[in-house]
Length: 409
Ligand SMILES: Cc1cc2nc3c(=O)[nH]c(=O)nc-3n(C[C@H](O)[C@H](O)[C@H](O)COP(=O)(O)OP(=O)(O)OC[C@H]3O[C@@H](n4cnc5c(N)ncnc54)[C@H](O)[C@@H]3O)c2cc1C
Image (cartoon, rainbow, N blue to C red):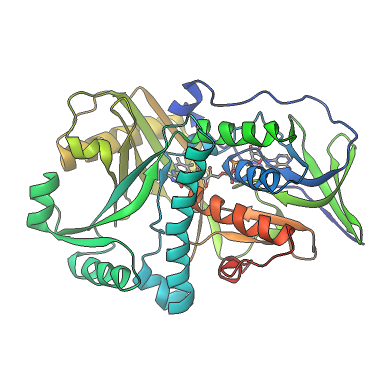
């Protein structure tokens, strides 16, 4: 029998108030206590990763129990700015050098498919979450200049991605933004991440899933016949499989040198009118460090973020939050000419990244029936979707052709 502690990291996952927690239907009611039933799968974590895993498993006919030590949808997920991108933080040209052409190309193609699948899922389930397909603009910055972006656009189109290289003059003409170059690409989206997650959890509950909160898992064990999880209060739960979807509060067993926690900042403005028409329909980010990124919601609210720092704790400093919000707003004004005034919501959070920009989706070392989904990076939500697909296949006894790309490493 394999038996280990399951003491996930503990973090202050948000400082300030993310806009999404103030929107309706952004959480769901949970049971306060456990039932004694045995489940096919226990999902630990009720954020976007846990919700997608639970949705996929209940759709496949599994009985699922979802647990969280916080209320549902109150971890990192509501801090997300929810630009649902197929673009991975590590450009394709660089990822090829790091992990080889085959895996890099497949990771990028899989991300495109995951965004399309997530948009379709939200439509099919009629999730009221402002899911909207949008193209993305990736602007030249101090990390990638015009020449590097031209090579990147070429590499992307060679593998069939819909990407267009824009020269300075094109960018000015179409977007009135002055940068040496940009890549315009199809196949991204934006949504309200809290409503999306709550909607997916609701779908899982409608198929017989259960959700219990607050409850904290502290130990795990595996027998030939299944797994057991023990709670902080000493209760023992039995299932065939478990999936840890605990976000940046990952299991210590999953820690490696290839990922670390940083700090990030974000804001939301009042609805702004008029906005340049393209801003309603496009998500934007920079190839820069520190970077700026932004999108809008259905009401014309601008949601922007960036200014990341390597340190994992600086995000909990409220003075720094006010300072960073000012910098983000003024960078946005300098780039687009849009003045957002004093942001109505500002927040900061820890943010996990990996060296290769890819998620970690795999069995927990030492276990056959216990999995972890760590959808790190700027497109964490897209990676959560890939995680749900890979884990649902593994639990069904099937193999996903791309699983090897995202393994524990
Ligand atoms: C400011 C910011 C902006 C971002 N912007 C984007 C973006 O634009 N696009 C994008 O795709 N991604 C973005 N991300 C990343 C994305 O938000 C994350 O990848 C995603 O929210 C992680 O979701 P999760 O479900 O894995 O984790 P969480 O939402 O944190 O859920 C994990 C849950 O597990 C619970 N838990 C932990 N340990 C235990 C335990 N032992 N027992 C019980 N419960 C436990 C926690 O309480 C928590 O609720 C952003 C992140 C931040 C912080």
